[in-house]
Image 1 (tube, rainbow, N blue to C red):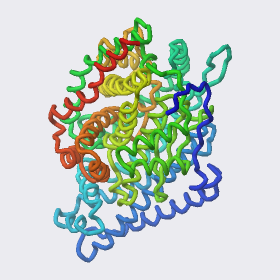
Image 2: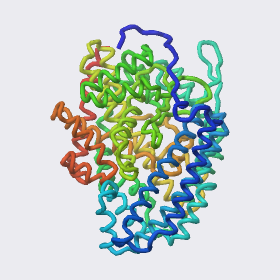
Image 3: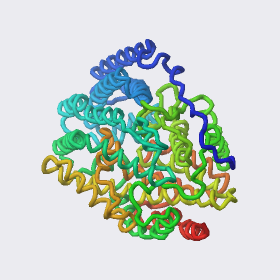
Length: 606
């Protein structure tokens, strides 16, 4: 990276969507594709209705053809949803994109009902007949998915009730998420800086939390809190109704625990999750010297929520997007040419929406584009090293999709916790490679801070979200939880998760309101998978250092298996570890906290 410290950088690029469907939400090609997708869905529905009731040698080919068509249809619907999400994210005023997304949800609901028919038939088959299907060469890649689907079907409601629930979810359950996302995207604040007032979206405001100026961070926090304070009743209504829908569904399916679904989504055992959090809670106090040193560097007495992303070291440097992109490619190449070449391709082919402008949604994401076998990355790049890491993170997600792009569709269905492995692993590569060549003490301090800041966030911030979710669901089972009570639950969760690291006066009671992850309708407990990915990737990264260049192929093989195994099985096969034991998690925690002494020592010289 350059040694200069520019105060202004060129605008980051926008992405290329026209090569997929030209014309945005008014695209005639996109409209035609949606029509074709609906027609394909109708044809698959007819196939489902005529599917032989039993699997025999004579009916096997029909069953196989149906499942292949079902996968194709899912791929097309995912493209409708992904493309509409891209359009709506780049422009929150694009109401047509929102309508198209809703249309895509309806298509997906119809697809899920067809899949429910398959599930209903699957549990009626004998084990021998089912094995006849899954042993077919064309079903080899999706055997795990099909077996998992059949096992899950046994725990669901009768087919007609499942279909009704899917129907109701479109205009009820998922609509609450759309409402929240729209509300969040449209929020604006008047921000004062350098004697000037400007109107910022929440996405733009979020970039202020990485400012070295505490007054800037504090104002950003206060403006964000003020904006959400005006929406607490609506956010509370959305959160309560979404969770209420889930709990009603769980009750009718006779799922006794609200953790059943999130554990299903992550293909992991509750013992694994409990072991991970138990180890983390024991290790959180080890962060105290890091926070104390950071407080001295920042010249503050109390560490508050808006100080979490305060930079240390060379914080005045803005990194141009092109330089950040080159840096990521260069540093990932120290591990894998395949990963580096992919990053270069994604950057050069304009797969990334990074421009810092008003009218965009906040946050970042990576989404795959169906049969195009491409991805698109959404973020707001303002020149901070944190932005650089976000870019590396999302490129990691995109690489994961690239590795799986030629697999059968059902074999690409990897759980969220393993998805985070690829993204966080790429972040680690970039940070570690930068540290290895850093000679400037200020730059080295900044890089160490970024590493330890990640540990702080994944250990404390994510743990507070998990604790909040648990306490909220326990209370929601007995009725609506008012906004003020939600804030109380959030404060209680933060006190336990942060301990003495975060000053009590600097907590964030409205975090339940401002964090989009609590409102994602298709993924409950959108928190612990991030921490899992962070620590699991630490273990993977440690093994990569031990094995050297030859590990790149093993890493790719690990990613390739994430859609075809349980989480514990992936870890056992590719890492040789038992995730239900403390050993792996403690080792991963030790690795992530190993730089505390060096940070404290270096900070004392500043």
